[in-house]
Length: 444
Image 1 (cartoon, rainbow, N blue to C red):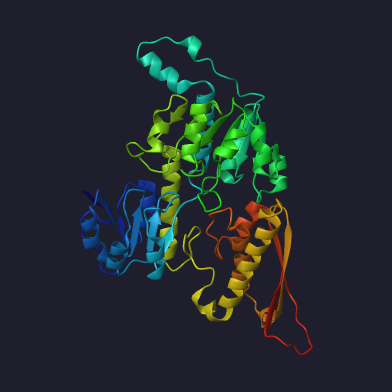
Image 2 (image 1 turned 30 degrees about the vertical axis):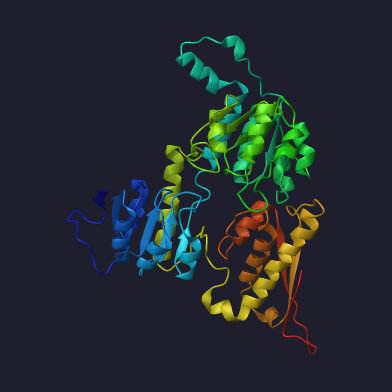
């Protein structure tokens, strides 16, 4: 275990100041935001029992991906108000247990956007020119130019599944290389796609036979698990190459291995796997060793700049939370503030389900789009007299994007997420003068 006392040169803590434990490496610039206000201890390499033994004295905990924040750790952290993940995924944090104890879990979903997009392009170019095999063969003393003839990417077609922040950056970079770009994303803004020179395609099945490269930039949800399987891979060109810098599991690994073995596609560039590191004798391990695969060990966010960005982001949020404010990227932040809960909770649940129903009916069953649409929420009865309807606005956004996005929608970020998805929501307060047969009604 490595220890560093950041709070004071003397190593003495101030009993009147909140304490923060930093269990993994975080940039000094990020910590500098916290040290004027809190006692910050950096203790790296803590074993599970060590973490449990010292966590009762802390109000905040900052981790990356290796520290396991288990229910036992959370129960021991009786003073904890916030657990911060300096990065995107929170698989190492038991979010339900944190939620049950009223502990806010935050992450930094925007800090590594550019890094992930650039790594995608690196894999695209590397698979196109067989760079992995070329590097390995020349280091083994072989000069195999004739066996390693690649393809140009200019004038080729790139297919993107998920035109969010990472996907859009990939599209712009690909256009800079002279590629044609098609994308599937029911929540994409048509105006934004058009401005980036991207052709939006309504269905994945229609896009797959037309692309030379395929990259996926979606979260791993029930709707995206095994999104690309045998049936999809068989429709692709034999010269096509697939890329994954998103999440292991969006491609069915067994199907992908078969596609490479059978020659359904030409190659793959993979940064993420269903088990990391790939376990011995697993399908992921076979993919890593496959001659048509260029593999990297989950390096999508591994740049100096990305690590700095996420550190600054989460430290800013921790500062805000411990001073009584609201975070910008809370994984489990409530849509409803406590004082509004009793009055709005039933309606919030109803509006969220209305959004989910709309998406299920018009998008998933009919191949429609949510991005670029305008919605109107009309409040009747007692709701029409309420001045703060942000929870209802947030609930509709959450319902509309839930089936194809892992955005953690809350009252702080709902407007921003709606804007990013090209969703316009107008709210109308209908104050009727006649007697009503109901106390509240919402029309979408």
